Image 1 (cartoon, one colour):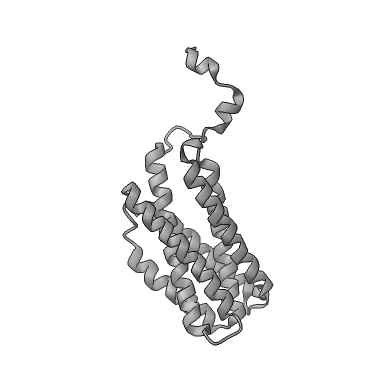
Image 2: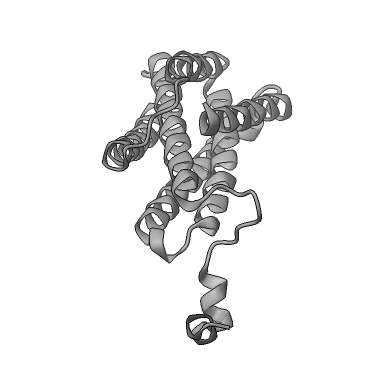
Length: 194
């Protein structure tokens, strides 16, 4: 054993991110995180833009605008990270541009509760996604981890707003939310890789 290894306590080793053989090295893994998070926040901003376009004169409009403003802040933050860390964005951005807006407008056309059901479904997936990312980051990425945890708390707030606004009363709630969750997970998987 080297002197360096002997000095490390079990608590020190526990702080390191867990990596298995074949896992990407830290830099590519962090680049994938930033790429997928920027894509996700872009998609979320487009979902809210579609919802606002349809529901602009409803009681839900101020809440949707509040959530949209937070998503725009998230997007601006990840756009800055893309540039600073020289991470290429996903090539699927044009698809997320159209698909996000269509999802937002489409669910809003089904009514305010359906729009909120969409929010709940997306935010539950993002909550899990951000939690896994935060758990995988070590002390060397403390700033990124803090940002992800802050944004995760705001996404949880959006989910809670959706529930409070009657998301579960949307027509076809179980089917709608499962479809949105599956689409969100697929978008995450694709954006990490392409």
